[in-house]
Image (tube, rainbow, N blue to C red):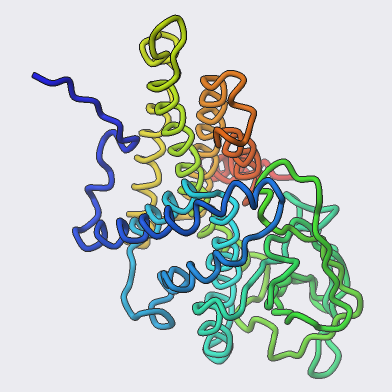
Length: 394
């Protein structure tokens, strides 16, 4: 009988949990992403530029409306489906997947969850159509993990306006976004509030962060706010304190767990294909024990990651997912991803450090995925508080 070779990184068949319609739609999206998005990726990453032609593809696919059906095509997509969509986007290019995620998850999620109906109707249609691009301004130059209690950006109420002062850093899409959700501490009550700052507002300045080694196509910005005046109608009406902000982050942390899986899957695919084709000592290196050990360790990590994010998606759908579940998924999957990309790069030897073989990009991009949306350590403390009842935050 012919020898069967299983090349699928989804070794246990988690995609089979999707419906036939979902698998069909995913296959169509996969084909478009591979044809139109992937060819842009490496050159844009090398130049550290954002390929704006990708926005036309995202708009045509309608992916910005998948989680907001009343503003999209009216059809609800399950969290499990959007998770598998994330895998496909990240396999094509983590940078473009992040740019999309900032727009659809952080920015649109903040407006949808934190805004009132009037604000949602005002901004969401243009954002679903990608006519207006969003960004999310939380992290500060002197504050990352401690931004909840140490936010330095301030908001001062003056009549029907708010005056914002401060600085933000690492703001994805920040150099070109039309709408930036800025989080600032109200001088009057000390609570964190959300504001939508529109492009071109006086006193709002952005500059691109240069010299990145990861997610190079993402246009991360330093933002300064100097007496920026925002009307009360641009304050997100359902945001009263940082706990409301944390609800947005809990949702997007789960998305990052899927992103980590997509990065790991692509690294595995590249490593496996290279091992089969690369010959040393007169035969493919795929037949060497040490190479097979690396591949199987990667596959084991990926299978465990699939299991965790699939169960998380099910809990999101039935309403039982908590911030601690998202934190554990983000912490675990990004750690396993980091191992996978390192093993993949190792398998390539010297070829693993050049962009031509692609694995170097995923190796570098993994460092950013590992760090953002809460570091591994901070997510660990969220889970630690959940399982012990004691807070270790300082």
